[in-house]
Length: 289
Image (tube, rainbow, N blue to C red; front, side, top):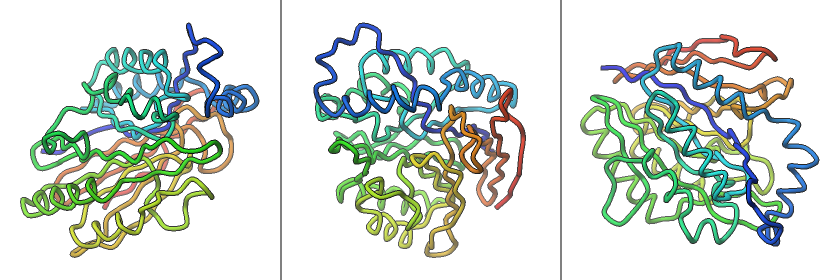
């Protein structure tokens, strides 16, 4: 049985209701400046509603969001995201991005997991949030977290050896069962793609796991850019797709607001890509692997 799902990322839903000025006496100060000068004009949250409507119209089984669902990791933002996901009309799978662990307090309190844990249900090692595995017959979604709190002007990510070891075990087990393995990660996994201070710090270690165990598809966001590539695996290359922000208003090539519709079964990956044209999401290139 195939899994048909819509992938989007970096939706950055904002809600500052009831947020006092003292909450900005940390890294959020630079984030607030960025919001005032750039982000509020460059992104349109209502595009996420259009992505959800498109997913329903296209008959998707599920919506997959690869992180950065908030701007500043505030409780009001997570409340908004939880409500939006709950009212979507189809199941949602989500993983965190760097903006979802924007401050040490947000990361330490596991704010993302507390608010959005219902959208990450699945198999996992006892006592650990990540990786989690959601099985759909011969297809599996494998959710990772690269979300860590960083210094101002940094947006790096980190998996850590324990999470990578658990991923290794999961990929080996599912590979032996010939399950189509879809790895969900926020930061890019293609070398040289990330901007300075935006990279996955243990990318080499992640690549070694994929080279040893393999994966059929790796989906990510973070750079707000359309990316296509492959990573070497033991038997076949792992297809890598990065996607632009789902709520972007950019008119630059590769940075238009976007989502992709996937139909995945063991041995088959089909992707239809949609981009925002100023009034609607427009069907573009399709590809099959």
